[in-house]
Image (cartoon, chains in turn blue, red):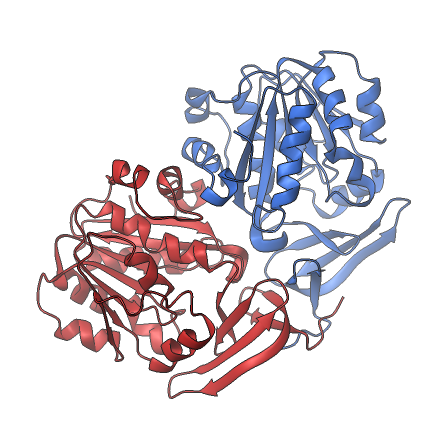
Length: 283
Length: 283
C-alpha cells in the first residue's frame, strides 16, 4: 500500500527506514532562523510537532522519552538542586524535572524560542509547569552558554537535543562535554539523548568515548521504546563526574508524583543492555 | 517526503501508523491457500519476508524477536525436554530452541508449508538447524494438533504466530489456551507473542484474562524493541502451569551458545513493566 498526502512520513535514507503517522490537518508551519517547525493533527497520536521534517513529539507517546531522559538521571544523582536543560524546547523534559521537589532551579537553554512558543500553543500540557518560579528560560546557543557558565555550579545537565546534524551538531563532541564536566559539581551527571542502539551504534560508541575523553569517570546507557523515532528504540547516555551505579530506590518507590512509564523496576531494567550493545561499548 | 515504489510499506490504519523499508528488488511472490508470501531485498535490512503485506522477518533485526520468544521461557522452565512451536514457519524460533542441549525434541506445527520452504531458500541462516534430528515438522493446523495431543506431554509451548487475524485468530482465545494447559506438564509454560504494549494494550489484557480462565496459575509479559513491527515495541506473554518467578540464572550466565540480544540482565529487565502496562494487567 502506498501513502497519500494524509500521512506525514520521516525518511531515514541512510538506514533505509521510514515511519509515518496518519494526519488530518496541518495546523501550523513556520521557518525560523534555525529550522522549519510544523504542527499536524493526527488520527491516533494527537498533535505532532516536526522540526525540519523530522518527528519531535506527539501527544500519544512523548511520555516515555520525557520520563526516561529525566527521572533516571535525577534519581541517580544523590541530591539534584541545580539543573540545566540544553534544548528541550517543547518543555516536556522541564515539566518532568520540576516534579522533583528537591530541584531548586532549572535553567533551560533552547536556541530557538519559536519552538517553545509554538509548544505553548499546541502542547499546553507539556508546558503546564513553565510558570513555575524555579524555571528560567534562556533562548540562546547552549554551547556558548555552557562555555560561560561558572565552575561546579550545576548538579545535572540534560542534553535534550535534536539529532547531531544542524543546530545540535556541536552538542555531541568532547569539547562540549569538557565544558559540561567543568560546570558540574562533584557528583554531577550529564544526560544526553543518544539515538537508536540498533541504527546508531557507532555514534553511541563515539558519545561514550568523547565523554570519557572529557574527564567523566563513568558512562552508562539506558534504553526504552520510542515509537516515532527511527527504529522505535531510543537511548539516553549518562556521564558521571563520580559514580553512576547507585540510585535512590527508596525515593523512587515513595515518589510523590505520577509517571506512566518510569518506576523503580524500569529504572534498573533500562540499564540492562543487549549483548551486542555491551560488546560495542567501553567497560 | 513521499515514498515511491522503492519502499515496502505496512500500513496500520487502525492505529494511524506505517513503517517502511527501502527495497531494491522483489525476489519472490506467491499466493498459498493461506496467505501471500513475498520476499524483498532491502538496502539496509538484508532480506525481508512479508505475509499478506505485513512485515514478518528481516535479516537485520530478527535476532531480537527470535531470542526473546525462546530463551526467557526456556530458562524459566526448570527442565525443558519436549518443546512445541505453533507457527514459527521461518524457523528462526526453532533454531534458538535447538541451541538448548537439554531440549530432546521440538515439534513445529506450521499451517503453511510454503512459508518454511521459502524461508529455507531465502533465509538459510534461520533454517540452519532444520536438519537437527531433534526437530520434527508437521504442516497442519496448530489448533487441531493441540486438541489431539496427549495430556501432560509437552514442557514448553511457543506460539510464534502472526497477528490475531486470519489463520492465527484462534490462537489467542481461552479454548486454545485450555488445550495448551491440558497438554503441558506440571511445570509447563506457554509463551505467546502478544503484540505491542503501546498499540495493543486491550489485546494484551484479553490474552492474560484468557490464559487465566484456561487454568494457568500465573501470567507475565516481557517486552523488547522490534523495529519492523507496529510501534517498534513488542511483547511475549508467558503462562505458567505453576510459578513463573524464578529462572535458571546460573545456566544463563554459563550458557554454551551465543546470543546477540538476550543475556541474564536482559532476562530480568524484560519483565520489568512500565507503570501504564502494570496498571492494565491482572496481578
